[in-house]
Image 1 (cartoon, rainbow, N blue to C red):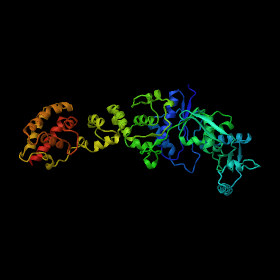
Image 2: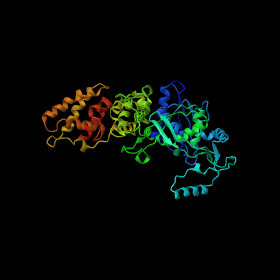
Image 3: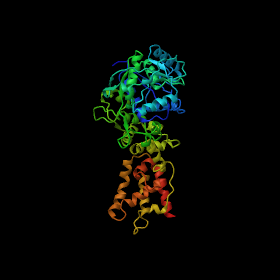
Image 4: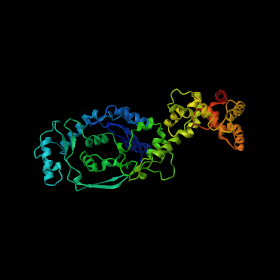
Length: 481
């Protein structure tokens, strides 16, 4: 393949960007990039009844965050502008007139009540209703106020090759006289997307399996227009948590930007979605954008449904978070007004423990809140691990730790802190009652004010020797009071 490859993503502005649509866009984009082609983003907004306000900016924001860039299309322009179908009505009308002139289209003369009567008649005869069996004998000119229908050809069977599913076919029963342009002047999907694909030179169409049954319609219309159909590649469905049916809103399908709000990074979302229905043929699990482009091959897209695993997403997200520099980690984490110096000190711990930026923010607000403000201490909790037969042990342990910390340099590693303080804890362990916990617990609590926090050696390293000394002294003062 060469630079003539053209793919597109053409969503309707009818709601949020779910992962199924994003995965289709990703495969179309990867294929275009892999073969040095072009990727187009256009908006199919001819179904005005279902359109949701602000969907178009949402689509643009979603794809931009995800990391897909388009060569031409909505919000960017290009040689085939406009890329909004509602702005291309004259073009669809011109194609419709060509079909009328060639005898491939005609105005629908029936009212809704007349059509309903014909359908009921077919039901009574236990026959399928086919509009082509009721084509009017005499046709009046089309004035644009009636629906315009396509005159379906009588073809015994349609066959086509799908780049993922292989050879597919359907009989003539799959093709009836479908509507091309509605009475409101807007084209149906059947006409509009075909006209746009022809005009924009689209060579490969990535799509969901719900379009397979309509392919004979599309092929018959391409033939009537004297145009070559693009190659079709049908994507596997994304399955819900039970692995049995297509992922839906009921099963927890979310807006792509919900994942952003939850603290996932786009590198992870792209990595995971690429692997939902495609495999590289190797054991490689982590893929950068460039690696995906290099490895992507339609022949390795599977036919059967694929499961979107949010547990795996967490693992892959943590991997990509850890690859960020500390400064980029802070910039992307949306940590608001946190003290930047203390935040920089905490980044290694956040990278080690947090799987999403939301978890990182929760850690800063919870177990790491002590890094940004002095804790309020409770005397009872300070002495919680003190042996009953050794009153005053907690205070003496803190005093011993105080002396050791005072000897530490201002900037010290966790390892050095542990090497310095553990001998004191080990000495208590040898004495029996109380053990290490009677030493390390009051230190941890004095520094954090929490029952759950990072280990005390990590806290000392994060806080620094001077702040640690201040907090130990505050704890001793409580015990002296």
